[in-house]
Image (cartoon, rainbow over all chains, first blue to last red):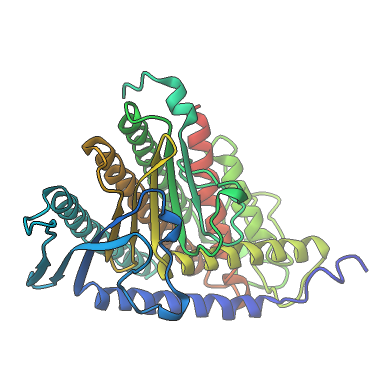
Length: 138
Length: 282
């Protein structure tokens, strides 16, 4: 019979998949709202040509600080949702603030704040669209 | 947009990898799939790589891609409007259009003169392919009915295709929210900057010391482009799931097994309309 070996899946299996997807997505959005309560920005310098070395150690998934040949953490900022902030400044060998690294770090902090705001707006818009679809159905 | 160095535009490479089983192109037409040899072993998550031939034209080239993304976002908004308009036209059929099985049917016809007719007709046919369906000879209205069993081989294959598309879509969304976005910029083959952004927004940037300010700005802009692309992909997910919800809510007579297939159908409609709009500009 043609198609006998094609699939044995039935729509009800897909229904389970959809339900699971909806549940996981809702969970992820909920965790996003919790996770954004704090924003961390790290700036590193790295030896030329070593991007491939920047990989997470699979045994240290929760270890947020990267270490490796030629990788050096130079500046760090943590900003809480109420705007409380911790900033670690980069200094050079003579103890002076390293202006170039500091400029790059500040640019990254601004970019991170902007990205967080856009993500929040996108997720808010998505939730509003979903509610709108529900309203129209009534 | 004044990009004078045409060869720089041609030689620039904007690649995006990390979506499992996504043999499909970027819906916004901004990023290409990289060759296998360009993917680092052990690398996971979503990776955007920008390789630019020279520093002089680099910013213009990146900004041109950002413009292309914005046009793609307009296309997405248009596709969403078209789906919503189509949804507004799905109405309960009169008693005369009830199917032979007695199932409640919903009128859904697409006039030939309507814009995006092939895509709308495809959506209609997808819906029609869910089950033993009869089409009104007078109105073209489709009567949805049970899908607990496949009526024939064509229907079975249609379901299999829809299921595979659905599973790929789920995988892509899971990857998008679970992993880093990793953005790398190289100019003339030399690494400039690497940024990794977590789902909740934490940033890690890796700089090669001594880079000129222009190169740093180029990487800053490629990160903006990649993040805007990630957000645009999230918006695609939102439009598809909301559109599918609209179809599901309209088609209340569908049995549960049939409703789930409306998500792949909505996905296909949105991406097809976006492709038509993008091709129309070429």
